Amino acid sequence: MSADATVLDGLFRPTSVAGLDLASRIVMAPMSRYSCPDGCPTEEVAAYYRRRAAAAVGLIISEGTYVGHPSAASYDKVPVFHGEALAGWKRVIDAVHGAGGRMFPQLWHTGSFRQSWMGPEPGVPGWGPSENLNAFTGHPEATAAMSEAHIAAVIESYARAAEDARTLGFDGVEIHGAHGYLIDEFLWSATNRRTDRYGGDRRARTRFAVEVVSAIRDRVGPDYPISFRFSQWKQQDYAARLADTPGELAEILEPLVDAGVSIFHGSTRRAWEPAFEGSELTLAGWTRKLSGRPVIAVGGVGLSRPGLGAAAPASLDVIKGPLERGEFDLLAVGRALLADAEWAIKLRDGRLSEMVGYDKDALAGLV
Ligand SMILES: Cc1cc2nc3c(=O)[nH]c(=O)nc-3n(C[C@H](O)[C@H](O)[C@H](O)COP(=O)(O)O)c2cc1C
Image (cartoon, rainbow, N blue to C red):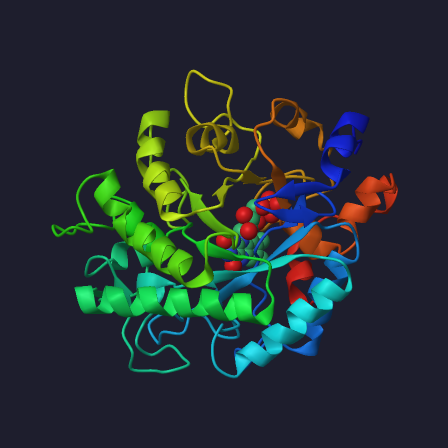
């Protein structure tokens, strides 16, 4: 493990992005921790985030948190972002601010991953852009295609959550539009077979995401940061792609810029890999170039391999090229920060021998 001085310099200079002053360019990537039995973040959850804010992480994106519609939830112990849980979120943001950090909640709807036996309101079926997406979710139960009224109700739940985030004092919101969940199911041709205005070509498939962003923008005002996370890969299919060329990516990004996205967060498994044939630019680099918006890069930083298996600390020199070319504004780190609350400050201060690797045991508790 080594860290080139230019990399450290680039990452630990205070910066301003989308109107937010950040203590460093390191972002904690959103990571579900399944530690909220009633959907309400506990003191322990607040302390977990606070430890990262106190240790040189400039911006924290929360674990995915369900918007306030009963169709949004799938997995147990995931925090919700409505009702009584908002008091728990207030505790979280106050703790993070107390340590000098910044934080966005990541607003999540799991789409057709939901099955009607799942909590917290069993009986509510899963919804997706099209019916019967079982082949993609691996679940046995058929899910329902959303009507226009369903779409309007879910959009309202996003807008409401963002308004609540602003009221609680969060520094912005991130929309989870990645990894094969609801918004991405609309974006992806394999899961969006609609023939109405929400389906068809890439721009039409982006309409649902655009309406979510517009509704949030209307509610939070012109300057409140809205990050939009998207991905080529899906958890159902790592080789899936939304766009095969930069021009196709622009068809998705441009309407989202017009709708009011302030920051894009392109989720990849290795942040330094070229996004398209014939160019060395990464997904972050292309996204920045095509959208003109600040970008968060993510994937595999600080660890020897991607995925949930054991990974050892690894050099950050792989991101030197994209950093020097200005391909990203902020760099998100997931598993390395999950396993070690002090990962960023150890890196900054050259305490490299103290860094710990990642393995599945790290998922057991909130260290
Ligand atoms: C335990 C775990 C939970 C995750 N949960 C989420 C999530 O809630 N929302 C999301 O967008 N990505 C989620 N991810 C993906 C991470 O945000 C990140 O993109 C991924 O781990 C790659 O970054 P890394 O190599 O630095 O870990 C999760 C990853 C892990 C390991």
